[in-house]
Image (cartoon, rainbow, N blue to C red; front, side, top):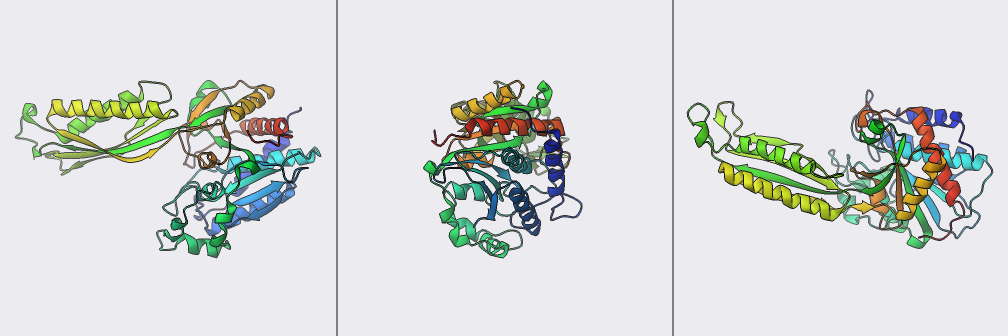
Length: 416
């Protein structure tokens, strides 16, 4: 099979640039769920879907769904997708790349006059980032039958409920329950996404095949010591909560470095009373642990607790960890990992298997169907930032791999 023409990669990049123009802010890319910018972006995505030979519609939860019909109307569909909402002051590739490369792949299939046995659907989810409302993955959860109706009463910072926003967008919230797909109607779900990390760039690789979406454990640690005058309390007699917390932060980092694929982050720390001339009597910091294997993550969390307790005893302070969040790892389907790896090999590229440390719509769809993900190299591993960047060559490589995957799976009509 020949590669898609360079013109397809250039058109893909041009479309990504054009979509980035739909923003709720004039001088930055901010496209929130069910906002005017989301509506304009959804309309443009539907237009491109139709140009590619698909039918297109907006469903009851605000997803844009394009369908390229197969020869067998009753055969289960292959889903391709990602999201078109963004964080505030975002980059232009996190999410939209996966949607537009899916459209480009279907466009190439149609241009070659190929009609697969089963349908291909490209889905542009509207709520992956969870910025506007205190909920996330609304669109993908709806397809998986896991949408929580209580979230319709959640409000944004302006007091607008999700229900009201959906109605204003032209959606019917009462139809969300009917969006749930049956497992027998879906072959699998594939998501192309920028890596959001530096591994592929460091290794000189344009794409990588994802093995799992890492599970995450988050906690808040409170350290209590004894406040005192900075000039009168001797160093040997201090119970400095902030100094103890500093050593604990380094202990968290050390655990994170103790094995491959484990990451440990302290993203926020605060001290009280917070005066320049007072020994801190209290400190608080966050912990975020991630690993693609749950038991390894859980063991790391226990090790962090053990080390923090030891530091606290030695320094005469009390450290208390409070669990705030725990989400299990989501493994990608072995057969889709193999199929993506075969497509990468067929494209003449080395196969690099790697986990995802960030969450994606794929994890919400995992209870419904097999999932697979392809990562694309991004400059500096930068994401959620206007400096996000990929090359047209890498976008073309991703399109090539996805197209080869589609042709490989074209006549699959039985879910695994």
